[in-house]
Image (tube, rainbow over all chains, first blue to last red):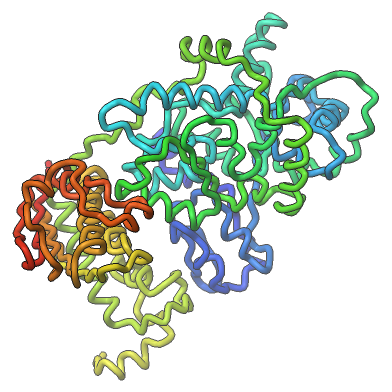
Length: 434
Length: 139
């Protein structure tokens, strides 16, 4: 009984709506790419599949929709915590603050271990190159390969573009590598269990939370908690001083640092690559790939946020200012790779970069039943019939994002035609008697 | 269930949109992702052929729980030698088409590869009529 109850619980949502602030306008329902939001009784509610893209958070003029992170980690026990910030963090403090200064600031805040991600990102670039070179010549290679890095994009593919799941290489992302290796090295050094050490990720977006809990690409995540850049910003800023310590925590070149911006990841991949950012453009390109286009490209870096992770909802600095800061860092540190190819090749051959997911996300040969298909066709016919009754003003006043979605809701018994504000007029126009 | 889509020749800005519409439509009904992919690849190749070489065209799709039939017809100049057009790499695309990344001579071969059956009716000045069938495998 208990287990069954646990399975049917509501999924944890990292995007939450404060009903006391919501006035039931239509901006969020129209912004949602999965059409997951409806206005019910004058308030916005998430009813469908949320992929944590935060488009609703961005458009809400009353700040009624907020993204949250986990509170599960006891921050008092800082000495067992490995902090691993997104490289976006380096762009948030102005152009004179260097990555090492930021990492030392975290150290001063009392965290036990500070692990930079930018160096690992450069290692990951080489792993991607090795994987693609090994696989692109195979018959029916799923070209272009798609970066596994942005969790919103991965969720979007799993929800709307399932046939593209096989385009995502089964590689573990830099943030997971840092967490895994950090835990293992500390465990070995101190002779303790790896799970004694907890990894806190400082993140520009809440989608990392979903990865920890129910990742699509991995069985198990090595991250334990995440905190938004904006949450930690004030305290961290007070702890960033002029360099007096000579501890070096940052080792990458400019390429690893540029990962926070769109095109940053592929700047380190010497293949035929493409970078696409922003949700709308991402969807447009995924649609193209799904009909067989862009097969001449090896690898596409998709980022759901415009301009890349710099545009994440938890960032403090405006994305274009942040980009300027990162660009300056790239110039300063240079684009020469700090990572040795032979070293990465050895790790690659050992399986260091591969996810623990057992079955690859090959297209499951899903055998749908003829009854399901017949039902689907029937439903579609009814939706189209309903749609003919509607004025196609696409106003959203009924609580559904557009007339088509409203027709779906009516067909599925979730809404009544009476909620269409034009329904009285329509009845008269179409000569429908009650 | 029958759906119809019209294709305008030489309209490279809108080219591909009807195929994406077909793809969305099939997803909505709930067909298997692999099948949808094959159909949308064929729809796209056929649509592009009309846009590049054809005249006014129409794409129609008959959806049934057992089979999907996609027909694409246009009133353009037609294909003089169908056997040649089915060879990989054979292309009559103009340099302009190639500059846009089209015209690799893979259109019809790609359709043949992805459809369960393909029937081509054409000839000099007779337009092109393609009929592609896809079997729906169900439990």
